[in-house]
Image (cartoon, rainbow, N blue to C red; front, side):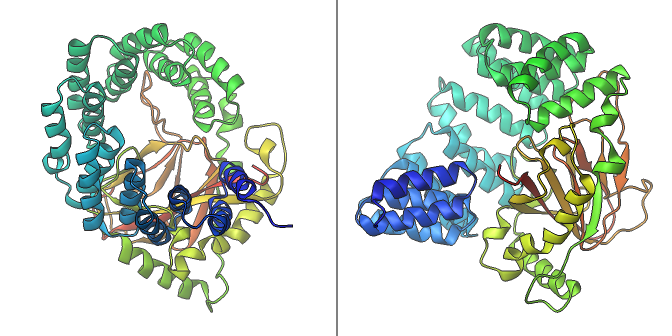
Length: 467
């Protein structure tokens, strides 16, 4: 029995929602066989291929769609993303410029265009030039004012971010989006009182919004109002029990309060696991595989600085490595299969948020690579949509420094403001080919280093089987 086009589209939607974009792309490709001249299907195929990390194929699908009449700005945005993902940065820049001529107030296009220029040049003025010009031409474009402020924060200037947000509040009056951004910026500047002031106004204006509640909780923790923070967090954890950020907030409240229950969540001995990768099929040894893997990643790390809204600072990041054409990059899931199963077996079952989701297997949601030069680091963070997070060190040419943990992975130091500083509680030294696995809710970062060559890693998230 032949599957209909509509059935294939529904199948693709279900697969994509289940986190299986490559299988979803196959279903869309089958639907195209039923309607080869439908340009919308080529847009959908490209977007899904992009989510699977198959950027070159996404470019090809869109160019076919353009020839068949596809002309929507949304398609041009996906095209620019795919070109950038395929390392065709000059072509991507042209695509973003074309898009902004058609949609000059498109916040997403401005953010991605600014990010591309920023990563390639490490020049804030150049990166923000198109955004600044758009605001000059459209001074009442509220969303662009918010974006410009946030991007200054992403470029490590929280003071400028907060000043711009306050200026926008003066201009436009209190708005939920402004107070949300301003509360976070105030906390980044170390001002807990201002963070609470913005978050209180935010929750009055948007009392049922999840992000408003989360921002208010973080501000209350920063100010030491732990009972209020716990009241807010209890509602969030009831509604979103698997959100890893909310579990991290719980551990932080308990640590600030001196509550020993935090050790149930931050059990470093049980939950931080180290194991060496295994050589995938096609390589005679792990060292041979690692040599090819490192060469492939080095060839793709072309950026001068970090992307926006990620944890890395002053380093290069490339995403979706398992969707790349390079065989060593695509073999990474196979290389971690053995260590992953060993960890899950050692982890066992239980009632805590980590063990309760252990059904004996898990699948890699995505993997990315980070290259940190001297003075690069990761801010402390968690992975809200994960379960198990991983970090695999591939190269770190360490040299003696005053801090014996320089360049090491660190755990336990909160990525939010707390009433008093809470230092890291566990450090893990980088070792070539060693995979570190840990709960996605566990605060982690990288200690800044100033000596040596660079630090090359691959990271990823694992979801429970069936999720």
